[in-house]
Amino acid sequence: MDNLNVLGTSNRVTLRWVPGHSGIDGNEKADALARRGAETPDCGPEPFCGIAKQHAYSILKIHCNRQALQEWQSTSGQIHSKALIKGYRKKFTKELLQLNKYKTSAVTRILTGHCKLNKHMFTLGLSQTAMCRLCHETEETAMHILCSCGPLMHRRSIYLGQHIMQPEEIQMLPAQKIWKFLESTGLSGEL
Image 1: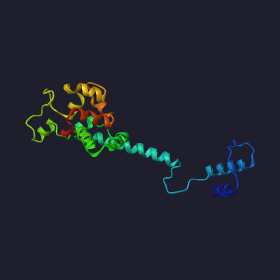
Image 2: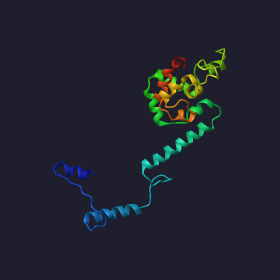
Image 3: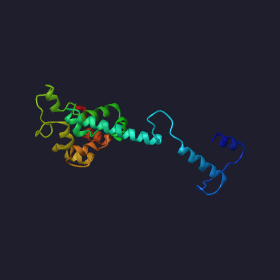
């Protein structure tokens, strides 16, 4: 490659593709060198892996993601978080980090259930009731607010796409949509 660059400094160089085994001297030499390279035993530290670096990175990334997901799923507790967070999602992480600190914090708290909603505050002994302040029908959890609280159906439909949602559907939403919904409810300050 260096020779080609030197040659190109004072000459016009055109590279052309030539079909293999076409009887052209330079190409026949290239074929012979390629064949010799393919027949040469691998060298380097064991275990030697004769694959492209990018392919190895891809395999490693898939393995790490699977292992992280398996660990996330097998960890005890965190029932609320596991219901609303599928596991590591690169796209969601990027979206979340594009929000400002306040919004990122609010979305994180609602998805983990560690927020100032009545059920969590009641569990901590900081609220007189665990009941939902909006519908007064069930415990006020993050999952209830995000998925099924009756008075929030219209807002949920506008911002999240449906009146009633399943946790699996929340898992796939962009961070910005979750924030917009929370902001519209007036509960974002409670998170």
